[in-house]
Image (tube, rainbow, N blue to C red; front, side, top):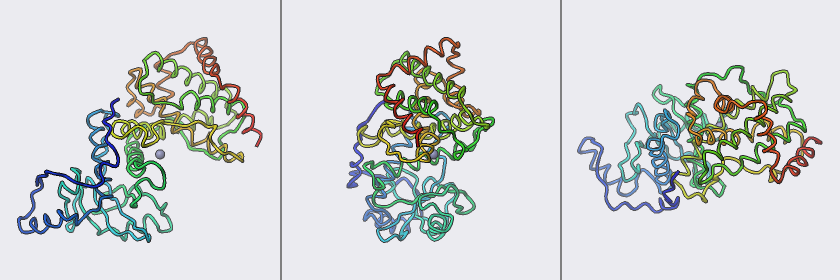
Amino acid sequence: MFNTGISLWSCFPLLLATWVFTHQETPVMEKTRAEKVEQGQWTTEVDRCLFEQMKDLEKVYISKKIWKGYSYRAYPQYFVHRNAVGTLDRAFLINPVRIPPSAIRLDRKESMGLDVWRYDGHLAKADVALFGPFGNELFEFDLLIGNVEHYLQVYTDDLSRDSDDPTQTVSFSIHENFHRYQNKWEWVPEAQQDFRNFPVQQKLLELQILCQEITKDLPLEKITKAAARNLLEQYVAIRTEEMNLDPTKGRLIKNHELYQEQMEGSARYIETMASLAVFDRDSFPSSFGYSLFEFHVETKEDVRGIVGQTVYYGTGASAIYLLDQVGYPIEEMEQGKTPYDLAKTYLALSPQQMNQALARAKSIPNWPAVQKLAAEWASF
Ligand SMILES: [Zn+2]
């Protein structure tokens, strides 16, 4: 893993000493547009910063093959800007496959080298899709423009979206577009999303919190293959023990938990690994997960929300990272496999090795604290 140390704030202000016309258009129009482009007619600094982040991340997917077969640029996107009073005031087509007649291609100076077109023609439709009765006020997978599905996302001048992380806007797009890519994958047999019936039980909680604890610092700047294998064994041993304890009819540890780790874990994995290659490590959340001791929990539903959903982003991404570190082709997940499936196959642990791995996991210094937290959460 390398870090080029590009500062996120280096895209402000935008000053490119040299630039070249690369796009052929009609000469008369070109002159007018070129003049406007020089003045920043079609974009603001915020837009250009966003495009630069996208461009850098796109490059990383191509050059580092974080996930073989996945290309961020393969999906056309429609990014709409929302101003301070809540109005959508401009929009851009990114990596379009069909160009609406009134769209204007941005010159390199404004596009930052990305294939970007200023196109406000679908602002009204985007507004309804995002802020109408069925909108989530953030994104939509399939806004139709010229009969082509576009990933739609709104952004504001605050690319951090009220956080300390200036990569929030672009990371969100990376994550959601990976979900689109997952649509091509084979279905995990018997997989389901059943958040409501997900079990909350002390012995399970101990293992679920423990799993999060042993993986919460990943990815490391450096990890040996032996250390990765050791942690992967602990992960498999913990999840296997959970399946032994699963009280649900729907076998939700296997069918929900492991499946969520595949879906959300892989999306978190590619999001974090690309960001690590482009941005300063301390400018965004560079770990897949976080310590559960930092959570404020008051009700059983809070607990269910954490162990039934929140943790899988981190534990799933961690398992995938460990698989990658031991040299396993993580893309096999596309054939209807979970990270657990791949790890179990790769490790082929005997029952005795499984017990030893579970004992190693429980030997971490804060195992008593994990048990205490599990007891507390189970008491709600
Ligand atoms: Zn997701």
